[in-house]
Length: 333
Image (cartoon, rainbow, N blue to C red):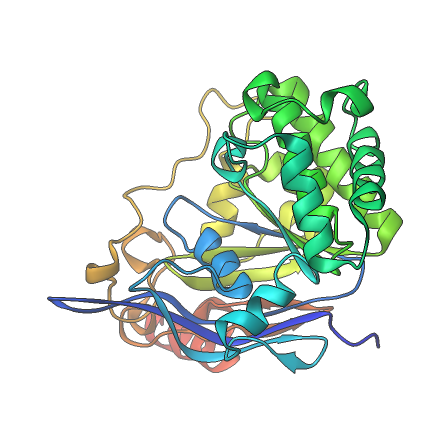
């Protein structure tokens, strides 16, 4: 079996406050293999973006990694100093952010930003870096790249700016690309182009992708595997087709049922009652228990760890624990 490019082990992210410590990411573990696209989905506040920020070392203070490990090709990176992490960020891990306007400095031309990033991570002259930057812009679909490279970010449309951000993330040829909601601010016709572009370029370079999104349609078309987060915890992870067509965790099943299809005859979509709990009000046991129609006694008492279901699939739900199911059936009798 191929060694994982990225291994996240029991990751815990905390935010100290005057009223106590809030745990935003709680004991999350997953791997990403070389060349693989892992989709990370969940509602707003589930911890998707925080997981990406923790991996790349960009947690906003007072947020901190309070436990676990993050390994890149076997090298632990979560405990590196700022300078060592800066050398990895951009060179080995690229980041595509949600809003291109916050990713690009409006006071500098696209050329200045691309060339500076390239020369930071590669021993190239100004002319060589400019040539690589033009080639990158051309590859990501910027028309007349040699002329437009000297434009400022505000001269580009939203879709074109996102393409520039992708070029910026890929200019040092990273091994891993973290794409955080890369299509949220774009119209539907551009969304598909951007996702296809990320997947195509990363496949060419053999890079792995961690695609963070709330859009299950994007995941279905793009990812090899999918990880579902809920309230900072891993609810389900597995091959994307199996998870989409036969979701096992009740939360994942609710997400799947809320997606309209062309062949659907039902007048109404599936609804998940209630809302995700606040960080200071996560219930005991399974965090999903107040919204789950299948919850039983143990769900309100004990927190389930991901249970191995075979074929690379894990589900954090007591419904799939043999001892728990037997106890429930006995109680029902």
